[in-house]
Image 1 (cartoon, rainbow, N blue to C red):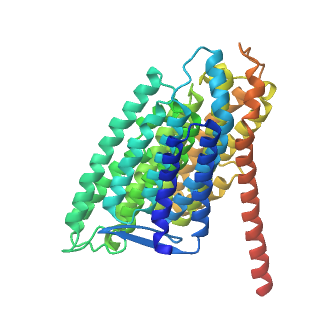
Image 2 (cartoon, rainbow, N blue to C red):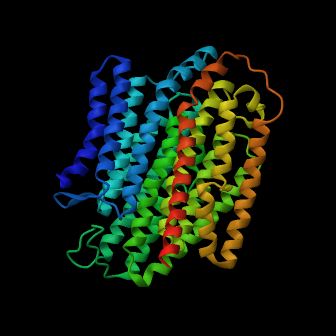
Image 3 (spheres, helix red, strand yellow):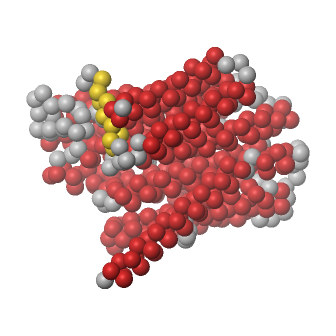
Length: 476
């Protein structure tokens, strides 16, 4: 049965999409979406101690607890499960807000649910892929599946963001395809593109393949300077979709580059690591530059994603893969908290302009709490889990790189905290639709649960380390 689990995981979101298409009742459609998300997460959790590999012809699908893709798979299922609960209260609130402002609500809930399930299925396929050919197909599928979701509200700006996303990511995937072809040329005769049986014969061909794959997948995961699609897409997409784009899709794209580094011959590891380090630093610089003076709070979160993709790239480049995984997990959870809260602010204020949001602690106290704590956490402020991963990174980076990273993180921290303080403090800005305040406060349940879960997980991990230290002390 273990070998069929990958196929079963892929079939869950697809089956959910088919049943939703056939269902007419809105409530039952939502229950089906939640059930599909719950079943997906349960199967992944049940497979935690197993290793599965399913072969279809020359293509392999699989999962392994020692593989970073397994954790990407777990993050994707957890975030999707949380989003399904958030949609239960967000969709009616978004419809009410649009009706009051005489704006189009967007696509139908049935179409949205089907597209969302297909999008999740493509991310599951990306995490399960065990050869570079299938990985390329899966990443391309995530682009096609997620693009219509960006245009949920069907405005001119969201349509423009969708086409920009499609064109630029398709360009990146084209580069990755060429890199995959070069990778095939670098292999020994009769060797396959499977991650488990790579046999690189030509280092020069592999170098060229790595450069093209890094550029292609780097464009998709938002590393600077390949990031230009990301701020538009993340800011224009509805907040539940933005949360999945930032918390799950970027991780899936990062897998492509991570895979290339993992299969590199030992003599080429410094070459690969230098790419991760260089573009990681560039991403921090670009993020710091654009966050300073930012006027759109959702675009600010998008540039924060560029920053954290850069940090994860630096961790991989400095051979701190375990730290990169921990940072990836907590970044995904915190960024989901922030994007969902940003969606709540948009419901009430009807604008993404930072200057139009003020006095949150007076008007939306629950959202203000989640917004401020989440922003402190994403900046790595102690006791944020990201503080410890960033501390490990700075320790591993050495004096020069460590000083550069600390300086850029400090600039980003000051810029984001300045923005958040302006939004949360001060006098209340008059809203034409004050009745939306109560509705918006009700949509804080899932973000509040995520915040509580992050704190609980961090406290539990710190307690485990403390008990382990005590145990080792008494053994000594």
